[in-house]
Amino acid sequence: MNWFDSKYAESYSGDKVIVVNFGSQYTHLIARRVRDLNVFSLIVDYEDFSRDIVDKINPCAIILSGGPSSVFDENAPSVGKWLFELNTPILGICYGHQLIAHLLGGVVREGFGEYGPVDIRIVNENDLFKNWGLRGTVWMSHRDYVVEAPGIEILAVSENNYIASFRVRDRKIYGVQFHPEVKHTWKGDLIISNFLFNIANCRKTWFIENIVSDIIDYIRKQINPGEKVLVATSGGVDSTVTAVLIHKAIGDNIIPVFVNHGLLRKNEVDEVLNNLLGIGLKPLYIDASERFLSKLENTVECEERRKIIGEEFGRIFKEIIDENPSIKWIAQGTIYPDFIESGGLKHSSRIKSHHNVAGFPQELGLKVIEPIKWFYKDEVRRIGKILGLPNSLINRQPFPGPGLGVRIIGKFTREKLEILREATEIVENILKKHGLLNNIWQAFPVIGDDKWIGIKGDKRFEGYIITIRIVESEDAMTADYSRIPYSILDEITREITSRLPVTVVTYAVTPKPPSTIEPC
Image (cartoon, rainbow, N blue to C red; front, side, top):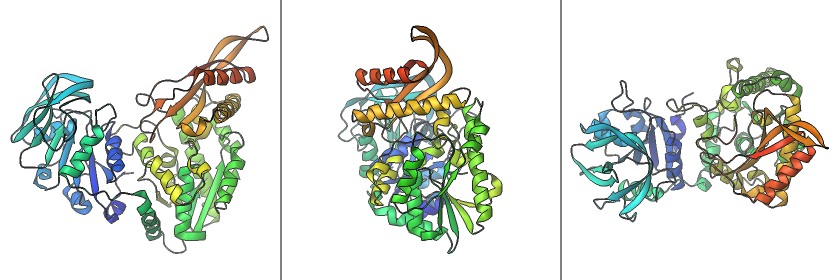
């Protein structure tokens, strides 16, 4: 499925920025930073990027992302030189910076590279670095570098005397060799802001508060009168916001379905059903836990597990659809990061398949509607608040669709599932007791195959190893481990090892990237 959906982007009347994707791991961060500045952004793969798309979208600016390629590669990703015939302001980042110089007929060479924090200095005052200062540390990740290009003015150089930024004279075309979108870059948001507002004259028109009615209208336009929509509801904020939006758009033609796949947390079924009923949704509840668990038993690979879960959901939905021929649509609570991590962008590698987009059988023959697929998690929460959802639901921690099944590393067994379910309750209860649970992004334990020799009741005991993962994040695109007090980690450890067949508890401190938040 191509991520680019021109129907919504064309209909949105505010200012828009196109981010052309060349495969950078940071492409999504560029789009996110633009959104943070109240300008709508959309990502388009370079192969799909065309003059026709630019004419339809009519962006106030175009940003060319970084990427792993070299302009010297055979079949190197590129865009047409027609780009320079436009009056649209352009900012090239990393590979995009090199590509601009290359297309202009400039010289790009392979060097020894610059990686991580690098100091740069401004050599010519300009609008891009307005109020930024004369020196600063930026985040580099490149080997090739620009030597020269016709008509450019060098704006900044690195400590290694590489061109760190340039502009094309008499044109609103800029390049930066570094990544202003990552937080490691000094005042990176200011650089993007300067480009959008001082150079491209974009307007701040992207406000979640003003577009909820647009989303509802968009849903109404897609669904014909009398057509019913099956909505998979898990109780999480994404699927619940999706269900409420569709309910507001088409009323009782919505069929919310809550499937218990046996991988939920303790007491979660009752909590989800009560929450959904409390906001006016009457879900069809299906206990399919045995169907799922029997198929998952002894599976080892997480990807296989995700696919089994997705396919089983598809079979269940097909059974519902066979009994309700008026169902013509399936609605999913897919959000923007889901497609990025499941390879929804052609030239960004797939990190993990997403059960929303990977599992439904082709024979369902239904249309899919994903009304929040343009939004990041915090934006979805703001939509939920506007819709009047309770804070307890809006602020609910992200929980993977495949549930506890993707927090079991190695062989899937029911014993490990029950240990994990109990450990999850322990972690959440202790953090809640100390007033921390609602102040962190996610907190959960993970269990694997490995065991560790310990002593319980003065006897040798071989127990499991539990890893605790507690992270802070703004949008799940990047994350860092939470520096919670050691006394609380000690309390979690003592409670888990005393109540469960566990002999060692570890704490995961690796940020995202390089790791993901969930283990698999």
